[in-house]
Image (cartoon, one colour):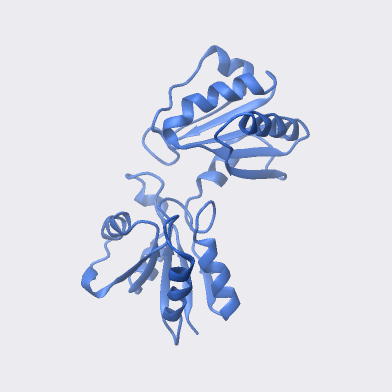
Length: 234
């Protein structure tokens, strides 16, 4: 039976220590990878000690530009005892990541799916937020334009008040704009956690009421960040 290994990657360039050794050992066996970006994948694999010539490795791209027929074509590789790796650009694959398409197809054809341990910015931020970890929702990227964006923030604010932690992300260069919109859309006593550069050298995770953030606006241009709205865990 063919196997699909869900291979986690680092969240920050200097955070190779967050990937368990057994993941590297499995990765060394694999010669076919499905990846978001080929260049990034090569750089990461070399960082882990992957010494195989890339002339002998197949890298199959999977991103927003990959046509459905190409993705279907990848399934031809899942035959016999072939081992294939699925990698995200950062963190765990198939979570806020197009890799879930491949995972679903593998279940359909009976391929063995093996998730490997690694860092998830979503879960790490939730762990460190002090908010409810029993009930939470991840929204990915919220709408870019108003009124949909403001409506989404207000709806998340209401859900947060009811005890369900709301988790979302934004393209890094829009972080500062998003913080301003959160402050203008949400109640002042709602908790806002801003988790920046998780596992990196400039990691900063802080939870304060929205009203407190208004008095001390952070500057987060181009820094990967996870945002959470909620109430204090009880």
